[in-house]
Amino acid sequence: MADVNIDVENFEGQKKVADDLQFQDIPHDSFVNDKSKVQTHTFTDFPPTAESDEEDVYDKTQLINDESKTGSPSFWTFEYYQQFFDVETKQVLRRIAGSMVPSPWSNYLQTTIRPNPDLYGPFWICTTLVFTTAIAGNMASYLSVEGKDFTWKYDFHKVTFAATAIFSYWWLLPAILFGFLWWRGSKANYTFLEILCIYGYSLSIYIPISILWVVQFEWLQWILVMVGAVMSGGVLVITLWPAVKDDTKKTAWIVIILIFLCHTSLAVGFKLYFFNAAAPQISTQTSSAPVITKFPTTPHPTSKQQNKKTLVAATNTTRSRLKNSTLKRNRVIYKTTKKPM
Amino acid sequence: MADVESVDFLKNQEGLNDVPLEGEILSPNAGTEGEEQEFNTLDEPVRETIMRDLKAIGIKFWHVLYPKQSKALLKEWDLWGPLILCVFMAIMLQGSSPDSSSSNTKDKGDGGPQFAEVFVIFWVGAVVVTLNTKLLGGNISFFQSICVLGYCVCPLTVALIVCRIILIATQSTLLFIIRFVIVIAAFGWSTFASTAFLADSQPSHRKALAIYPIFLFYFVISWLIISHTHTS
Image (cartoon, rainbow over all chains, first blue to last red; front, side, top):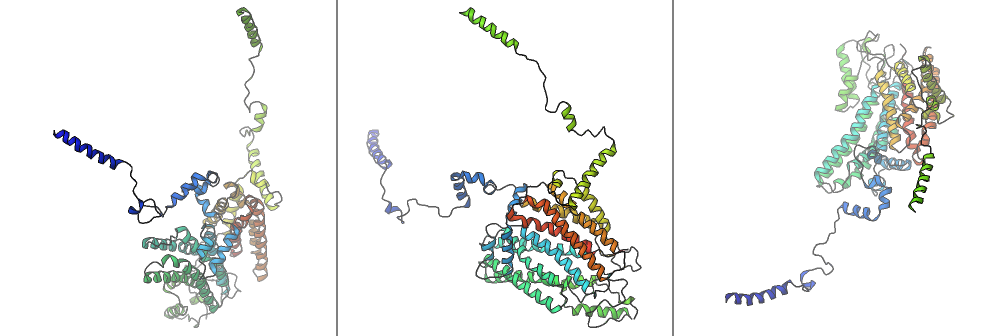
């Protein structure tokens, strides 16, 4: 009996369930707020791989032609590095010109570098800068000997020092900056290669400046330092500002000021180390004329203590910064004690 | 019917028997023609072997000094010439070591580069310039490019010898200007010679990008030569 009852009930229940299981027309308005959407969840933010998959499916000829671009070559093949050298002469020249002139209304990165950052320009700019600084530094010290004495010896090791300084600047500062931006979660998405590129091209203004530094006027040298630091530092700051502006005001400004300071201190360091006409960095063995020409006080060869005093006075008058003054003190070689007075 | 077929078949078999199935198996290099193509250096006197290599090096130097034919250097590269030039230049350009012959113990020496520094600049410079050419997409092999760059240092080596001879006399501004002009001329000659060999391997919109490192390489070597003033 119960079965019959249950059967009847169940049959009725089943009928209802069956009705429920049938396809039913549910009016969309009652469920969905937005009438334009049919799905409950629509994708609006596509990851980059989704787009490239579509390209691969629909445009196979391009896949065959640009095989090196769609599939990234492995780190250990030669082609991986070739993609960093995919530039033309005109592009390189345009990038160099753009890095020298700061313009606040167009972002240097977007206009000139963004499609393909390269390593050709920065690498050869750094190499050229190494050699022009070393050569011009030797010429400057030669000229400060008043030119008549041909037993002046040139200092080849300026090359090694300049190379270390410039290449470490070119790699370390972008690495630190990239690490900082990554840590703070900067939304501008500057890749490491782009920052390297920006920094490399920003050094290009120092090449003509280092040649002009040979001229032995102190005021001219300092003006050149200011001009170079302001112009290329300006481009650096304007280009890197979008990367830090999303951060808190304080950190953004501190980072910008630090970038500018590092750039300026590089220029000042070069000027003081290589081109300081007042500090005697060369040594001659046979000259009888005094070597130092720009000192305010002539050194007295009577006592060692007096020599020490003039040494201190000399380094103070050159207005050297702390890090360079230790370098100069080690390199200064005084020959005045040997000169007959 | 079957008999006719079998007779025909037998006839065909006889025909098959008439086809000659003998002959010689020839390899492509067999015979006297192959022996002439190979260099059998075991049988010839040592002098001939060495003279052949020396002749090849000499011909390459000649092509550098008179860069008219632009393909001869590239076909058979060798690195003997660059090695000779590099060692010679490094010996000539090295500065004296400190404390060598001076009474002052604080003497820094000549200030010039060490032998190893010149050697490294030469070879690492050539390798870097070659890598740059290849990365820019040039279709020249690695060692061919190093061979050309090394051989084209020859005019600068000649300039170094001439400068060294000039330095024997007591120096004056005029002699310095003469040395300077000679080195500049040699630098231009070297750059022109190497671009005559290497420039064809680059597409035209990148030629300047490939030539500039060569220019810088020879410029640095020229600076080393002109700065070498100390004759002890």
